Length: 254
Image (cartoon, rainbow, N blue to C red; front, top):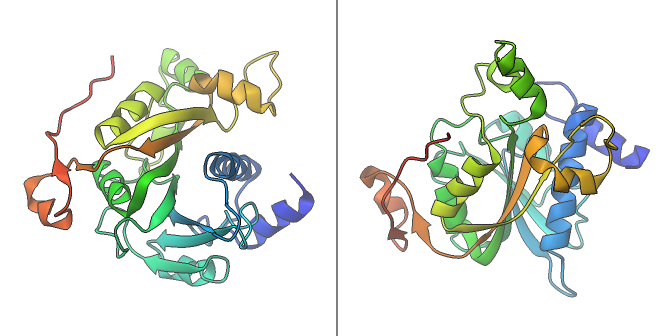
């Protein structure tokens, strides 16, 4: 990563009035590498990408404007105003509420550092299913409860790092995350971590982050939309009139 990219992100960061740190910057870069590989731009047509919980738009340094049209979705009006200077547009909306976007209008959806904060994890996935075009790509980045350092903390009787903050209401394992997106009509196609930090293995190797993703700090899952469904309570059915409802089932992590 060049110094210019680091400066571009840090200069426009929105993270509780603090710039993104080095670890968060690596996560953003990994996400953009996946998007560029699995959702490449085609000559004469930009790809439409929705960045949910976008902050001020940190994807732009890695996804050039001539190849990607990026729209942000942000709960903070202050952050959204800044994001409009980096993205093509930004809507102010809670990720759990109906998204003010046209159905089937995006090629890709990114939700980074979002799913651990929402109370209803079905809502963002339902909305993503609605706004994605057929075969669209969903990229999710979430804390990994199976991270080997978190397991070490549990063995020592300590609280997992990600669950020490009251803003984090969920933590995920690789298996649970894959099952969750699957019942929402997505097929997992790639999984990697932002970093693994296993002894004797190179920390900056992307091969290591892909091969040992289940032991990494943050999970980055890419999934392809293969069917139109909603997993939601009956009170919200009117939000998805064209979707085929499926039964909501619980997923137990053993």
